[in-house]
Length: 175
Image (tube, rainbow, N blue to C red):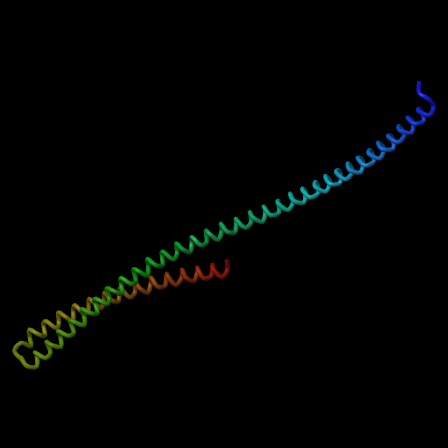
């Protein structure tokens, strides 16, 4: 059996061990408390992150919608520009036709000048030349009527183009 001194020594060792274990438990409680606080902070951070992500997603959706609308507007403008280019090509073709008619008229006028010179020198051919001049003048009248029609058509096309450009300008400045 142990002696009273050994028992006292064992009790002292047990007491020392219990004090160490109590210190370890206190340390564990502090560590556990720190871990719990860290978890709470992480939870708050995750909630804030989720809210931020939700807001950013909403902003991205609005931006995507805006970009889509602008893309549609751009497509519409491109289509209108294509139509205007086509109409301008038509106007250019009409102008080319008018230029050809004017060149033809210039050639006819040169021929008339030659005919008038011949009239002065050849009195016998005056009747024939006058008939030719009448035919040429009739042709010029028909050509001028065609020019008038073409010019009216050009005016109508230009008015339409001007109206559509006004609409585009209003849309561009209002939109």
